[in-house]
Image (cartoon, rainbow, N blue to C red; front, side, top):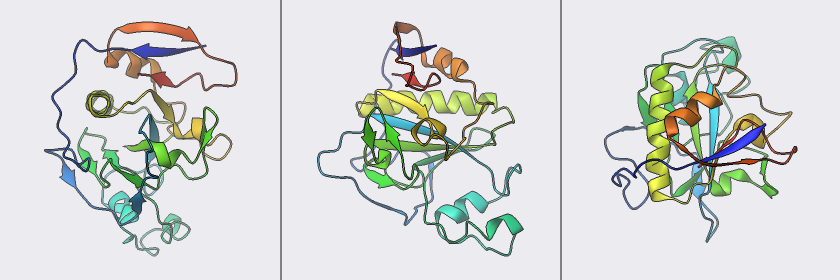
Length: 210
C-alpha cells in the first residue's frame, strides 16, 4: 500500500482573508472554536463524513449541531449528541455546496482525541472538512470535485502535507469517512503524481500526501 505526494500544474489564486475565511462561500459561524497554539503550522487536513439523522441527507441538522442549536427532540438520534460542542472548518453538501463554520486560522473542534505521525491533538495543526454522507454510501462526484478544489486552495495558503480520514487519526474510535470514500479518486483529481513512496505499515494506507 502506498502514500502519494502530488503536485498540481499550478496554484490557484489566494482566496482566503487574513483570518482564513474563504471568499465566496456561505458562512455559518460556529462558537465551537478557539485559538491554535502559538506557532502551530497547519500541515494536515482531516476528512470526515456526517449525516444527521444517520443515513439521511439534506436539512439543517448539521449546521444546528455545529452552532449548538440542535433540538434533541427532533429525532431520537439527536438526544445523545445535542449537548456536544463540536465543529469543522468546512462542510461539503451532497450537491457540492460549500459551507464554512470556522476560520482556518482558528482551531475547530473536529478530530477529538487523535494522533497523526506521532503527534497528538490533531485539532492543533489540522483543518477539518466534513462531507455530507455516511460510511457505506458512495460520495458524489460534486463532492469529490469540490473537495479537490478546496484542497488546492488550502495548499496554496498553508503548508499542507497530508490528507487523512477521521478514522486514520482516531483509529478504533471513528470510522468516517468510511469504506465508501474513494481515496484513489481524490488523488486522481488532485493532479499528476510527483513522487510515490512506500509508507511504513503502521501508517494509514488511505491517506494522501500533498
